[in-house]
Length: 246
Image 1 (cartoon, rainbow, N blue to C red):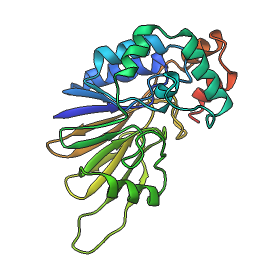
Image 2 (image 1 turned 180 degrees about the vertical axis):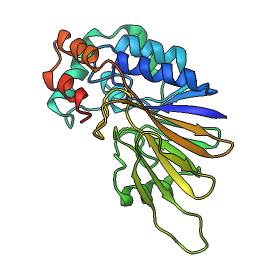
Image 3 (image 1 turned 45 degrees about the vertical axis):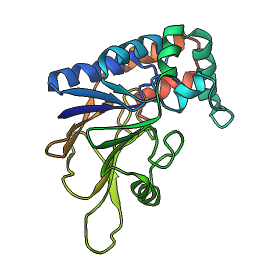
Image 4 (image 1 turned 90 degrees about the vertical axis):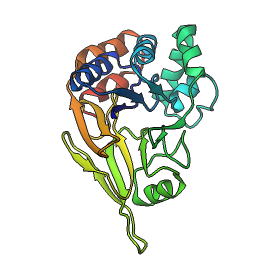
């Protein structure tokens, strides 16, 4: 099965629509969303509606849970907290009802699925080799998909008779992965708010028969997404960061 994995949409409709258009052209069998449909951006209702219609599997992320009031936002940045409060005040009940039915982890087609990490599906940012090692140890499946960090990357630990250590790297547009052996954590990057220096929407194509993967980036109307944030009265930095991918 050929799958498109997306994550961290953050209420950015132009980015989501651009990514899904590219995914449609790729002709994949299913679309999996790893969570954080809302937060930061200005179109939570429309993005949630699109995900509900287009994705075959959807997880919830920490921002989704924060909007539902299920986690404390005391550790959120000031801008993130403002976006959560705005979303709580404006989101339709249909949006909230859909988010309530989601889990931060799951599995499908022998792939572990986690919003953040296998050992902490809600909060942990997997950005270091030590974190990757711990995640690979905690994961029952051989291959896992993670989000949350907003960085397109991969970590792997080769299969070997003797103990080996994980290695990994940031994945640029077009990077190809051969994951037929060893253990893997793959992060598709963020659709709506990339933080790896590339402002384009990110998604990952995974073939669960050949165990190959390819990273993709898609340009979108950043100015429109930023204008919607400003028009909603959300903090300016949430609009400004989109153009620089940080």
